[in-house]
Amino acid sequence: MDYSLMELELTNDKHLEEVEKLASNYLLQSKTLQQLQKIEVDLFKNEDPSLFKKLAIKLARSKKIMTDLDGNGHVTVIFAVYKEHIRIKTQAEHVHGENFLLKKVSQLNWLFENCTGFTWDLVVVDDGCPKNSGGMANDLIKKHSLGDKIKVLFLQDAIDKRLVVTNGIENTKDSQKGGAIQYGLWDSVQTKKQGHIVVFTDADLSTHLGQVGLLVDGIVNHAKSAAIGSRREKLSVSVKAGMRNTRGKLFIYLWKRMLPSLDEIVDTQCGFKAFSSDVIRKIIDDLLEKKFAFDIELLLKIHLLNDQSIIKVPIAWIDSEATSTTSELGPYLSMLKSIAKMYHKYVVPNDLSSEFVTFVESLTEDQFSILVDNVPKDIADKNPADFDRFDKIKVSHLEAICIGQKKIGGEDE
Image 1: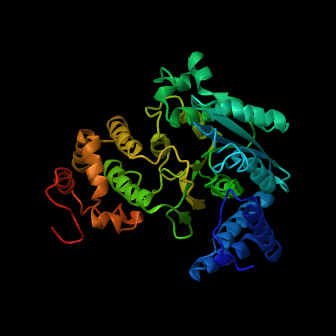
Image 2: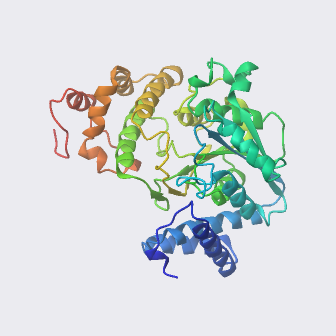
Image 3: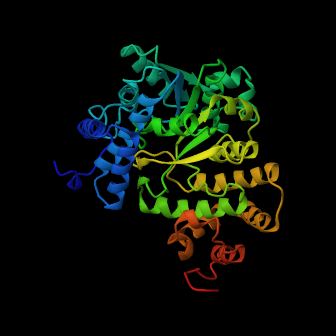
């Protein structure tokens, strides 16, 4: 089969079967993890266009990592649901249905099928969904007898009980994913389990959960507190719509000016991260951010505990924008303003960062929209991995764009 001519669709059962079959073939061909790593490097070196092969080799490496693990452990995978009443359906029920809950179960079953020491469970957290996504998940769990593997939490229940993890939240409207994921993380570490690793992901199928082993490797074999999936590494696979990519670069450039201590970390917003349960217990009770920038606060607090405790993991990620609930501009600006608050709470002030913080705090939605429509060429064309060292675009440049005086290109000012 010529995979280079096929467009991979993660909602397509036959495509997923082909990917897993390819991964199994890679495992049969290779006796060691090193051999699989060489295959992966060669695939990327030759610029093989096949997403099937690139995802498959990552799944193969992930599964090899899990089957080679010594000792016992447990992995909890958490995701939040809000207006997922369409994606939770099958495609037969709705054109945008992804059947994501049962597909996630299938992916985890595939990954763990030969693991003798590690087990898994799945936690769904309803983020105050007005469409009853959590209830729909419960119905599927009962229908398919999955109660021993999946449980559904409702953020509203945690708020009603005034659990410490909901401090700062008066109702579910105060949470946009962050509050729900934090509740899931908090709940998962209340009972101590040997070798416990907690992972959070997105509700959609952008990240195949067969890659969980790549994150587990960072914590178990590299002794890190956190392993974060990244779509911006040399061996990453990222299929992302152009506009989302450009404004994503602007977001990265701005937050890096405000939080320079998180150097080397680029993709803070990838919804695929793993943590040791011990580090979650240390950081989960006192968080400012309950919305979309919660990832950054988690990473910042872990970094402050130990600046060598986070590892980046190149993953395969394929955008699921058709029914995305976060494609609008709003979350980017609100996230930046939340990061400005983090700066005041966690960072020793410095002149450069303070200037960018003040600029972000002053931005209106209209000004930010103008900025997004006129992203400086030096930002749009540059690799975000270089933003730690690149600071050519100053606040004065951005202010000029916002008031419509000029656009900043690649020329020297």
